[in-house]
Image 1 (cartoon, rainbow, N blue to C red):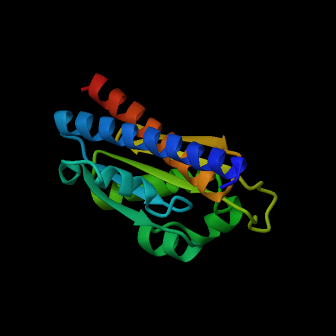
Image 2 (image 1 turned 90 degrees about the vertical axis):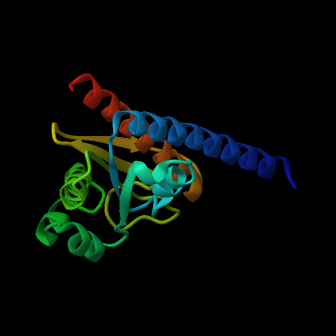
Length: 180
């Protein structure tokens, strides 16, 4: 194996370890405070729910995940408006917000998070650069969308998006606990 492949492999191991740590902390905190989580995942395609489900006790926290990879899936699963998706784009603040709010509404969970982005290596024909990811966290208190730009290969972008989403979930849980 070449040095560059070893470096890539180690980087992925580090990202996976970080994602596992975040997942464990989220499950423990949500179990303790009886919070349920719903997810709407596009470019992460179920990675977030997979990391959460790997943790013992996840069934008491993880409501489920909508894997909405296409425009049609976003429309059918989360009732997103096709005209708005066309207007703002599939990778946008508005789409991430609508996805999170849709997951929150459909699930009845206490909080929801969404991820939509371009992991690459190719773009979608728009002006949005590969590596752009919008993540939103929603609760009954509102929705917070945040834009990220991640560099690296396709799975690097996806893993970095997983970690960023879990960090946002963690912060949202903390806010909900503080505002009890």
